[in-house]
Length: 227
Image (cartoon, rainbow, N blue to C red; front, side, top):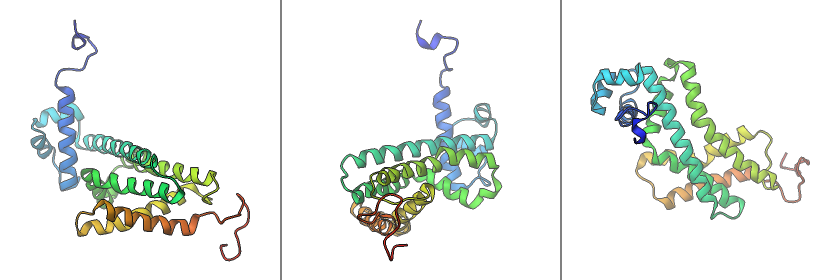
């Protein structure tokens, strides 16, 4: 008796069909938007019947919710791995921040279908239920921001940065580290060297505002001219 004969084992084919449906839904939602996407279109893309789609997910809204949360989780997991890998070879504060910034850019480049969904949400967001948007935020964007805040906090604890509001500081860092690469990517694919140069420029701008002045103690007053 193998594991598939257990009463609680998943039915044969179900994981594969789930994956086919969610993969198709991610592509179709990102391409056509939520309002214009039909369950028939997703079923055709997945190679299943509409009846099978409803059997697995119940409704278009439920399918979109699952796809968005799973995709956001996968992207946030990848971001954390990129950061961990980049920090292994980083030394000083600038190199460490560049590693985090490169991870932010890389996870956006490596998951185009997910960020097509995000772009679609930015356009159609007011039409989605609040709970759906909150689930997405918790699964992805808030996790990524929290990881950035944690890495910045490590530098602050070493006396290298001055941070009053970790979440706001993380937002500032994300904006400065990614803005140029995000904007310039519309002109065509960027090389790794270009991305590093753009991220480094953003990191230097961030450090101009957040680097702790030499000789200043934690919580102490800022030097004249830096208040």
